[in-house]
Length: 116
Image 1 (cartoon, helix red, strand yellow):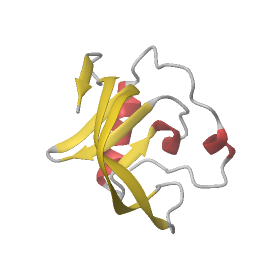
Image 2: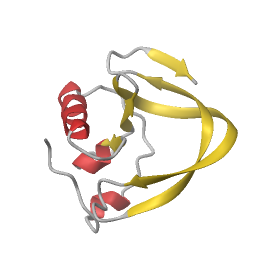
Image 3: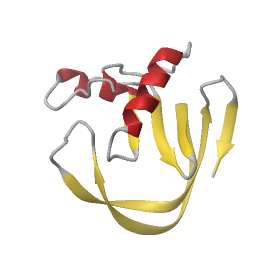
């Protein structure tokens, strides 16, 4: 499991505006193995000290990696759930989420995907 960057580390304030041009498979592998050991359902590259647009998300049958994700549409009812941010390990809070999100992203194999 990789070391998680914890608040108030200044890297957490860095912008991640630029798109990922080259996929770092070692980083993706570290993100997946680290997320497996966390209570969180998601982990960003920034949590491992890499300010780039990569997020790993726990889904029903494993972990999906979204590179340069772009939200295309949000619909459905709001629901509330308790979540935690890996960079704030002692904080759990209620978060409002929408039920359905249409997102376009590149996977770790470089394939463009659009998914609800």
